[in-house]
Amino acid sequence: MKIQGSGGAMLGIDIGTSSVKALLLDLQGHTLAVSKAAYPVASPRPGWSESDPEDWWRGTVTAVHAVQAQVPQTQIVALGLSGQMHGVVLVTANEQVVRPALLWSDTRATAELDLYRQLPAATLQRLANPLVPGMAGPLLRWLALHETASYQQARWALQPKDWIRLRLTGKIITEASDASGTLLYDLPADNWAHDVIEALELRRELFPTLMASSASAGTLTTRAARELDLPVGLPVAAGAADTAAAALGTGLLTPGTMQLTIGTGAQLIKICEQPQSDPNLLTHLYRAADGSHWYAMAAVQNAGLALDWVCRVLHASWDELYASAEQIVPDLEHGFFLPYVTRERPHHANPHSQAAWLHLRIDQQRVHLLHAALEGVAFGIREALTALPGSDQTIPLRLAGGGGQHPAWQKMLATILQRELILLEAPDASARGAALLGGLANGTWPDIASLNTLAPRPVSRILPDTQLRELYTRRYARFLASGD
Image (tube, rainbow, N blue to C red; front, side, top):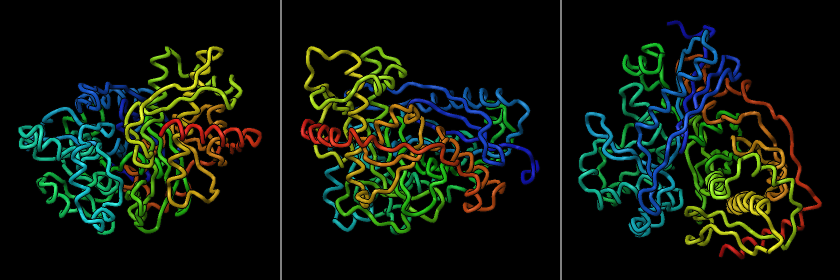
């Protein structure tokens, strides 16, 4: 198959927490088609969060078939991957899944973080990330202690998108944007932190070889090609973590620029030239997908996750939820929503915060609860933004991700965050970034710099409502006090 110069398209597959997206991108960077397939997330015990990887694969097959059906004459010439970060998939030597995958929102390994706290301060700075129980390191330690048979049966510990790549190519590798989110990675050395792996008494051989996100990690096997109705031998890129892929997909390549992505969680990221960690380790530092930069990130667990919960318990549609942003005029005395349906990241001082509506009055109705939910998530994002080093500068925020597309919600975000928002037409940024990596892997584009001309252009700019600035400043202060 001739790749360069063909009129084909790149396929990007993004393995999200609750759904997979498949996206087709042409050589000019235009999205030809997008499809999505949902799958369940299980919580067999309080604080546990798991998925069956086979559900990811079935969803991938469904989404890939559906996206091809939208543009049936398009030749797919390369494939790239992105996926949810931090969790872990145990795989045997004969490539069988040992148990359900543990996800980023899982908190069962909280006690295992005590081992990390015993590490030297200099070692923790090399890990460059806050101690979060849903990362692969603590989760693997928990498995070693509490599910010893499963742990011993495993030959590999993979990230979600790396398991999908295994199903596609039969090859086991990983790359730095995902590996740097495991709490087992030395950011300055740009390699696995073997001393930390040893300190946790984990097996070194669990962790795959690293390669560049844009490198070809193999080709589509006969079996996978048959299931997906794709060509045998299709080049498959190593891929990237979802946030790193989203940054690539929106053209966030310049150091100092900042972006807000809202999905199940929310991520505030800033591209960095050097791997400088947060001295307080309240925010994150990861490898960027371009292999040349890093990105600092303040992550919010409770964004779309919390809003989805609100919609379910109030039997509200997403349209109703977003409409509430313009139906209610905010007032200092209105009730608050604390969005902590799961444990928040360490930038939030109280690890025991839980979700609640507070300070309700008899005159408040269902629409007030919906409005308060949007406010509460926006306040949580503002708290994360404040914690991100360098956030004191009034740098505009590029806004991407499917969870931030409603105009009234965008205006509320701009006002509460007190930032100009630059709206990008890239609602499927992670899948788009995955497709771009596929094009780099097969040589369609020669290097990262060549992607600059393909970056989505700003659609509009959303300015804060200056009339509400003081009110929201006061409500934000009360929100913080309520969440302590």
